[in-house]
Length: 365
Image 1 (tube, rainbow, N blue to C red):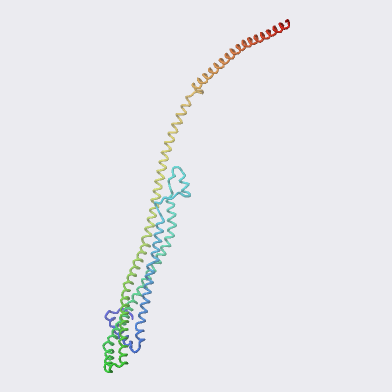
Image 2 (cartoon, helix red, strand yellow):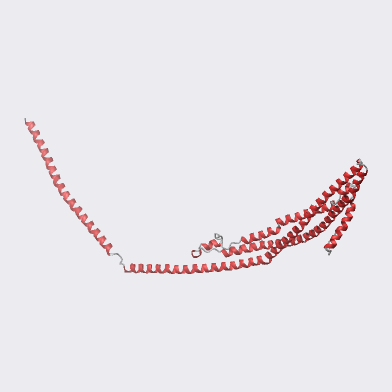
């Protein structure tokens, strides 16, 4: 059943016409007509429900969300204020005394920027592909919405057909069977036919109730589909904004950051040069003063200092005095030794003579 440029009144008229046709197809004498009543329409509901669930699952996970997260990750890789240890050329530069604290961050940032720019270009392609996919899904959901509307009109016709048949059974068929039972004095066959008809009506009522629940579910699916479409439209717009606005702004801000970093580096180097120049001038001035004063002092000194001459002369006098004293002491000790030797010799001679006198005396006796 198509729903193109048709008013609600016309749709209602079509539903009633379809209901009358379906009602005639329900035959109590053929139980299978009740079993097959509305089966195709129920299958359509299952198909629409599965399609809707698939769309919801896909959109809940979302390639677009992953692409945006990837973009944010790439952007966050650049840390303008991050302090890194110097490497390579920067390490060599840091070894220079007046540049030992200058880290070449601008080159590092530029290298990161060039690398990330390539990755961001890939992300942009993925974002655009995801945006096209989202828009395509919205188109598919619009087709599903129209199919849901058609299903609702079909199930309304089935419900109306069931109610028509129930009314016919309650007002015509069952009263006729009740009259037959009464006129036949409760004939068993007449009672069975009445019982079968009542049972048929009850099963039909249950069937109509189930279709009423299905109708409620179908009407709920329409706002669900619209919500998914709205979310897709918002997501597509956000992706478009990221491509058209966020990325150019980011590139611009990184360029500005590079310029500011180079400026900061130039100012820091200039300050280091100025400080080092002043330090060198002060050191050289102090060294010049020290050297000139020392040279003047050395120029005014003689070949040998007076203090040195005095010390040498004093040492020589003390040496000569010591030599004279030692010589005199030696002469005195030698004279004393001569005297002592004479005395010793005299004593020796005396002893010898005394011994000889005793020997002669003994001989004479």
